Length: 525
Image: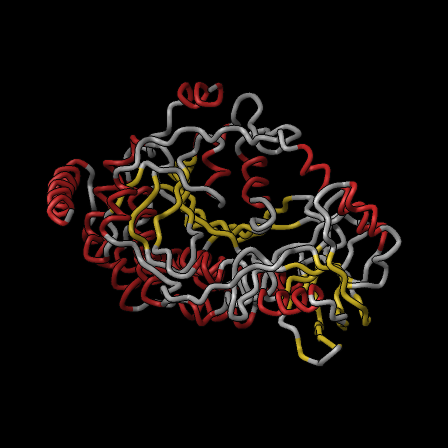
């Protein structure tokens, strides 16, 4: 295996050297970019303000508004132009909590590690705990009239295994080789809704809980231990918890060890009593939200645009550090590096450079999709599939670069099935081989804002990052804090992305796009 990897590495190096001769690389600009990005990095300064001071940043919350004001002021102070907010929506009501505590009050006392789900209303009280043991709609009948004023457990016991392997990891030669050798992606199959029985049960369950009005609903997430709790938003019967006037039963996620202890005692026949106090309020009365936009003007090709961005919002239990202050910090830092590089080199970008910090990503890429609907295409009623011809502005975007997979440094880039850009990106990565960024993968990657651009056939890309402990420990958890950001990795990412942005801006041609005919055929399979 080692010999195979070495041989492939040598072949890859030779291929990269050949490609580099074909696609221009401005080494003088890269040298200046490296100086400001690596030697004079400001990433942790941005990240500290974004997390310790202005975190968390739940969409629709007052803290997001404060973070937005800080970002706008910072970008203006650096010299960015056309700094403004672009409205999208409606999103619905926002939410913030001002106080929370939960306790095991009987038969013994102990404080419980738990967090409210976003959009849970205020609640205060003490009550007994009931485990809702139901698998069918018929099973629910035995709980009717018996849940009011009680804590309802929804989940089973989850076995916890001791972590003998490290949580964090980096890519190795084999994992990068798999990415590099990935074939052209095939379309995902359409979601199968044939399991209607399960769907009907979930709907009946939440309809019953809404009518029964328990004091609170408790669950534990499918992962996390040692006090790490993964939490998102509350559910509601018949609509979204964000809908104005929607009734929401208070909901909390409990650490797995504490949840298991409570449920084990119930199974032993030991009555359990809990107490809870949550003070929360709904915010954002107009239901609308905003993305942050800022630019560096271009010159002879100023009507064409290179976009780069990340989502600015977060969930509410940590401070939104790895998800996604890391990405927003890197993209703001890229903007600063580019401003300093332009100032020092005297080289102005040919195309306009446009930074976008999105909101509403955590609830469904709402900010970036709203931007795409406003500028690039009519998405009709479903908000996902473009209808008819693209808007003129769609033709003017050369590329969109995104970062949203935690604090890990860049190891390469996903092509999102756009094979025509492979030789270009290989050439641009070659100068950063010493920073361990060399891999170009045909693979798709999903779940973040580049998809809004890919959906309208704009070249949209997410970078390959080191996994670190992102999904294992910090993503959407109470441990997503400043302390889990890696300064060297963020500085490396900002430096490489700055180079990609500037080289995209300086090309004679815009980046090639995926053929429209092939996309149409893919959709029909």
